[in-house]
Image 1 (tube, helix red, strand yellow):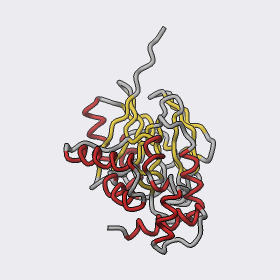
Image 2 (cartoon, one colour):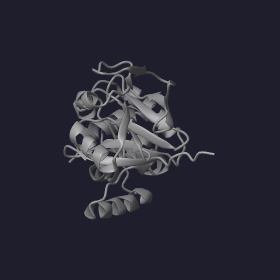
Image 3 (tube, one colour):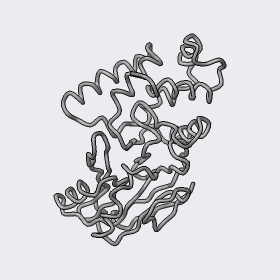
Image 4 (tube, rainbow, N blue to C red):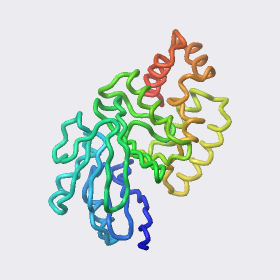
Length: 262
């Protein structure tokens, strides 16, 4: 009986705060959101890996900018959102589609998560409990609403929040400390959040990444997944940022506050 190769995920730092994700076994790799080809090529060479697939979540340049350079060196399929125009996509994906990769051997369910962009998608491996969510859900936060609405983003985050608590959240940016500072302003009496901030600050002091996060932790500390919590709604109303207890309006008020929070 052949032994299935062990899968790993390696973070590839890029630009000032991006993470590109390399999913790999001992020979083959797939890359998620390669905004820059150079660091991807460097890691493939360092680990002696063959690139077999590219997975894209949305069209922003820091997520797709390296695709064409990678395709010049590797003739591989490019998976991406059906509802966004991205050069090079060979496999257009929509809600509930499946991605089945032979090497590295992994499969994903596709989840439509519009809000940050109109056609944003996420990839979830139920076998591994890995979520690659681009700029929809961040550790301690969520993406800005560049093309979608608060209602869309609320629904998108609800889809992700319904995944198992043990899910590892591979988001695309190192925004965690700034997100948690805002979270503490929105929910100052949350003891789990207070403790998380201390631990994450220690990790950054040591030069460590704060991602992947764990979905159960996000549900207990991320204000954008907690927009129905009475304490958050009460604070928004007290501050004059919200005039009803509607969860979508509460999310919109949180997101607008975060946009200008310093």
